[in-house]
Length: 509
Picture 1 (spheres, rainbow, N blue to C red):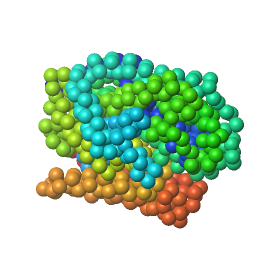
Picture 2: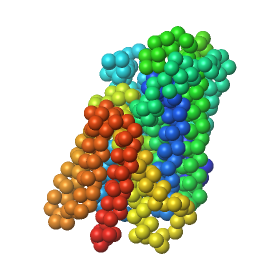
Picture 3: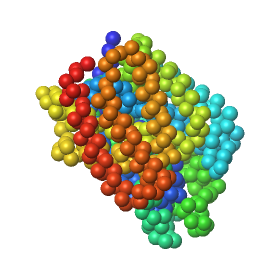
Picture 4: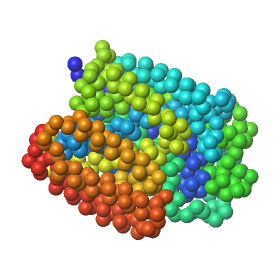
């Protein structure tokens, strides 16, 4: 019993847009301003454009190979089961964490009127025992709703996304009409008052890249798209362009609406009453109680919607990983939904709340893990173009080699910008995945040592550059030079990945 192709173009684009407009807009503008000041506006532009380069490689792959859980399968097709498992593993870990992080966003906003849900630990909002219980119940409700037929869910999601986009637009209009100071954009030491490096630091740390990762459900649901050749490209690129415009305007309005009192201690120490829910707190400070109420309602709807969409698409990833983990995960219910995969993701999502009990605590880890998993796009694209030239490609990335190198370079830069404090945790997660793979296949004689070599060189090199770099590293590689070091490294690794693919090795397992 296979999955049904029931999702049309517009619902698929709304699914991607629903993934893009979640807790990122509720918190990203505030954290962006504290890290980069007014230049956070530029961070959103850079973040969106960088993600479009990566998205283009996935658009071609998903259209040529429209399968469920695509990002877990493309690298398997090009480089075999070991490399396929390693990248699918880290993508899966990151995807599972989206539902808990969006649930935490919902609870953090709710703590403004139900204070027992969160408390501050070293200035960061984290869940209490009551908050954790609330997260558990909310995530359980998402699983239950997801057992319904996916065609019905995507139609219902369209209306949810309209509400999710309408509230930020209403907030923009309300704040602009009430209080907007253009002078805030060059207040203090000017637009780049926090320095050029802060513009890049904000990309992962403020949740900016996290906000642009949301188009991925359109890739995971490609196997259920009615017309994948047309739908997938429109869904991915249309949703990303719309999100860039929305987020840039939101950040600009947030900065312009701050009062001189709130900025008196500088951007780094920006704070105000109710900053557990930044936009609602700002609305209350400006005497706009009506807007605060709408924002509190949306702070429940928006993250819940994104958590729901990711829960749907991550179940498809788990389904695609069934051959690696357990084929029982591929069992579908009467509505063609992988229920066991949903339940496993729910349990693992709850466990992730323990080491990362707050929104900002989990964002850096998520970004680094997701973007490492997204590196499969350019790697698999070049390999499959060479090894399977006869496959129909209704959409082809122009200048594929240059674009793939650019996308791979961008992935490595973003991982580096998350900082050594985050990168080493992601590498531990990758290491655990590798151990699990070899335990599962300990009796096999064909261990892919050549495959292992380039992957080990990639992960070790990335870790070393991060450790020696200027983003929470030892600062041996100074800011500016690190761009060049990562560029050279990216060229070498991408070349090695193409020389040692499963096809160049003559293996077709």
